[in-house]
Length: 286
Ligand code: GDP
Image (tube, rainbow, N blue to C red):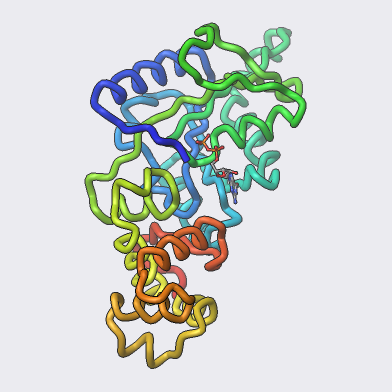
């Protein structure tokens, strides 16, 4: 996991770099985590992107609740923003993403073709907070064999373009933006997903949040995963439930270890497909 601490100076620099990159491209791919699409957006994203055509890409759809992912895709589309769900890790949805890019640029293509001029490749960049899968998506797009230079200090500033088929060029380094976590609940979601350092919050707070969340929305998955009874779930407070799980899993009274295990399991997708950002109106209650 990244260990960036976002101080105001870092934010100003990240913003400046993102804006500079944006001037070079036709379309911005705003990458978010499908499990927390709203909480994994940068707070100033609209200001930073301005009028530049953009697609919200909900990555890690394999880890999110499919019905809620559909909700979020429609939600963004209703706001006039193109959106698509993908799984960069397993190469799913990338063709659809490319089709959306072509749709966004169709006027440009038509104009060029009407003028008898061959359209140049569409230039793309990926923008998002840490851990949403930016590097994974770049690697998927360009294939295994292409070397990717990291966004490391000291590496030459010159921009490199990576070719994707004949229609696209992708900026080889993504724009990295800071997450927002002033809202405690957003902070817990970001920590659970691995977007911010574990040390920023207490592990048991994150685990208690996950427990409460599962109790409310993924009741059956919780019973199944941890072999607890309906009556435990109904009668125990969340802290007592955590203590029970700690004992049941052989950690004695070390609930921090149990918390760590639970967070790890959530990140490894062992607790089931769960979306932490819920729609305004619930579409499912598993
Ligand atoms: P970045 O910080 O935005 O560049 O994120 P990375 O590309 O380094 O990805 C962060 C973590 O998420 C890595 O462990 C990836 O393997 C994982 N990851 C990225 N995309 C996906 C996806 O679509 N599905 C799943 N399950 N994991 C993913």
